[in-house]
Each structure stands twice: as C-alpha cells, then as structure tokens.
Length: 343
Ligand SMILES: [Zn+2]
Image (cartoon, rainbow, N blue to C red):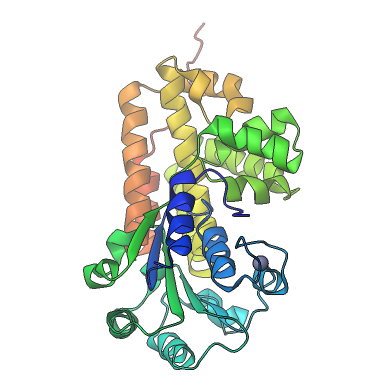
C-alpha cells in the first residue's frame, strides 16, 4: 500500500511506471515542507525492493527495514546526515564530500535488496560543486540505482540537474481532506482536526506531527502574544527582538522561518477579517481577537505588512544578513492606532 495520502496522480504515475518496468533513474519531488515528499520517496524505495506481489506491501522484511531506516541499500543524504548535531546545525549546504561518498556507494552493487536508492533531502541546499558533481552521476545512469531529490523550490537548483530528473509535484491538500484524514486515520477529535487542518496549509505531515506535539498550542499562543506585544512596542524593543531573532537564526533557521510564517498567517487573517472573509481564516480559534485587532489598521497597512513579511522570508532564503532583514521588518510594521477616549 502506498502510504502517501492525497496525491492520487503522482501515485498512479509511479504505480504504472513500476508495473511497466519503466522507472526513471532520477526523480525530483517538489512541494512545500511536510507535504509528503519523504514519505513518497521511502514508499518508492520500498516498492523497488519489496518482496511481495503487490509492492510496496509495507510488511515484508525489506519494506520494514526501509521504514525504520535500516536498509543497507536505501540512504538519505541531507544537511544533517553523517555528522554530529553541533556541526549539522551550523551547516547551510550539502557539500561535495557527501555527494562523492554517495557516488562511491552507488558504484557498488546492492547489498541486500534489488535496487539502491539515494534520497537527497533539501536538494536546493546542494553547494554549486556538489550539484555539478551530482550532475555527472545523473548524466551517466547505471543500473539498479535510483536517485530521488526532494526540494521545496526547484528554482534554486541548477536547470541542468532539474532536466535530468523526472519532476513530480506534490500539491497541498484541501483543509477538508486533511481534517477528514486526521479524524479518520489518526482518531483526532474534530475540533482539533479542524484547527490543525487550517494551521498546516495543506501539508498533512505537519498536521500529524503537530497533533502529537503537546507543546504546540502553547508555543503558538506565546508567539502570538509576542507578536501583539511587538506591534505595540517602540523601536528600541522591536530592535531588541530583531537581534534576538537574528541570533536564533544562526542556531536554527527553521524556527525563525516558523515564527515568520506564523506572523504571515496572522496578518493574512487580519486581511481576510477586514474583507469579511472570516470563514477561511487560519486561526479560527482566535477570530474574536482578530476582529478586534483588524479595527486598528487600514487595509493598505495590512497589505503592506504582508508584503514586508514575504520579502523578509525571501531575503533570508537568499542568505541576506538576518539582523538587517529583521530590523527592516520591524520598521515596516505599523503601530496599532488604539482609539483614545477623551473627556
Ligand atoms: Zn514489501
């Protein structure tokens, strides 16, 4: 059984390629974080090595080893593989040494399965040298070896690499489908499933891990409180917060990106509230607060903040100075005009 939910076209295509024995030697899976790229890559690795008549069965020894990351012929290459956590945290690129090591391994025959599978997670983080080195391998396919590149943005990969792969796009699912999947497949109560389905932006993997994360709602509440404090604060406080986020960025890019995504959700919700479209807001449990805050801003102000948040996210992805990006963002956020009663 294919475990990926909500991507019927991709599954149908891969299934028929497998049946016809026409599997590509390199795939590029493109889609937002937690949409299911790794689930699909591991599923494909299972299907290629499965011992059952209807692969991937998910139950044979090979499928189980792959699911638990214990199969000698299935390797994941990414920012955090093969190094201690301190070194991994500071890395921003997948280096050429990792790709050379992979190439050496790819040159050897399968150890226990039928097919070697190399999954490159976060392929947009390949260094230029690493991407060029990988290109040589993709240009000269060898039998029994499949490469699966996962990326959130294939625009950041060299066109030469993209053109050597079969590109499969994984799209976000609708909130209704995610809510149903969380409720039916994971037994999550409807109210929580409904909120998670909106917070996850179509990415089921995020919703599932969030459902198991007891601290998530507390962290979210703290982040939203901080957001409201900062929007009311003077520049000194805002710059202190910018410095804090910039320091955090050097430790964990993802946590800062998460914070910015939360801000973006909040400001989009303010826009939707202002335009009387509250039925499609993300933070459904905070509707009353959104209505109150939306009164303090004009539509143009809200749109400008959304633009600034998107620009900040893009600049960080392109390795701009995080302190500078955050300070500019803090300058761009208007203070709330809280109505003052006279007399
Ligand atoms: Zn199997």
